[in-house]
Image (cartoon, rainbow, N blue to C red; front, side, top):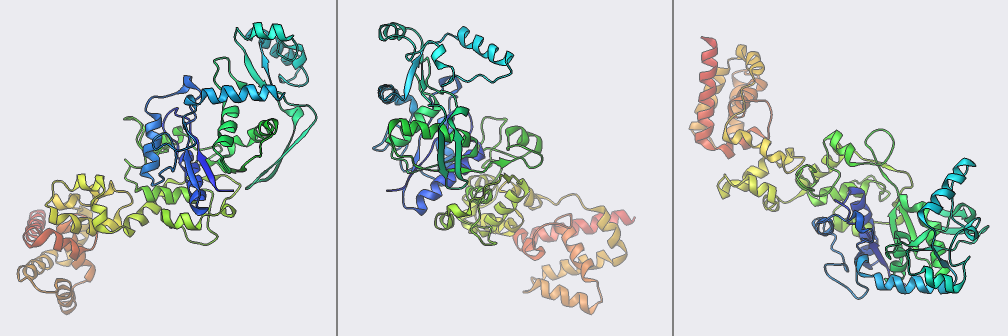
Length: 493
């Protein structure tokens, strides 16, 4: 059987990184098995539909490099790929299921159901509409054919007919056998009163018709697995394989990662910006490959100590056996660290083409772009760090007076004048020349380097000092050294 997997988000807002990771594992499984990766938009709940969500999902996947083989944008032979456009298909299959005896019409009023719930609560029970009590309600199992035809002109729902006292066994590729007694299940609604299918019905029908070979989704859907197996069985269809992925957990405490956690901790939980107030990893300065690499580590490893992977690496190394059962705790600092590695790894010329970098470089001559980025990229954890890391190019940071106070007894003026004269002579190897001089004159190397760095940068931070000098150029370097000499002289008077 050929491999076909699907990522099936609901367009109810921005795509959470938990959803991105689900998409990623689907994508990697498809590529590893040389199969198809399908995007299906599950928009049957029109009350929760949010404009722009579908475009956001598509853009996020494309930014990550996970281009669907089939989907609403690029089509395919198994479409439509929006559930809202498949209503006629669901109508056909709900009728088929009713004919098979696997489902039935239910005509109960809201008042009747509310009364039944109240009665159950008074008896200390949780209300279930199912095998135990369905014959006491108004449905196509309890009323005659003529009455059913009349009732179908009013509002109704369609429920799955779950037989009592049976054991549902189904295998999950990550968690093993999942077993549930049908007495614990109710007759779930498959078709709502507005004529739209519920998630449970639509996703089973779609997965069957789209020939999905393996359903890979979050563990929050694990409790629904026995129900979905019953729907497959009621139709007489084979079930696909199932994999339920572990949750992405909060950085601290219990529960899964939420937008509130991101707001509180000052980190994104969405791949792209959603409006002005909801930041995304992309706009925070992450490379797509950095975010993808980190997400792959949340709940999976390749059995080695390696933590750095390109998307191509992941396509070949991914395996189900590497997926863990337990939840994976989100760590934003580690995400930044992984992104830092990706920035260092990226070719400098390619890095300068990144939109955030290109925008920051607009005020600099084109010939300075590559040297500037190359100078500081080893210090960048996100693309946005470039702005702060090259701020000293325009002017020095405020002088670190604590450092200058420590240097005052080490002849900083003598040191700076020597550096100035050596630069003026355009000595071929500035570093070697200054180090030899310091050794001959018994000048502490720390005093030499700190004086020079304070002159060029203003603080004891930044990339390689002599590279800074090269990027600034002779004229700017000399001006900055002279400025520090004057600053020190003023302090001494």
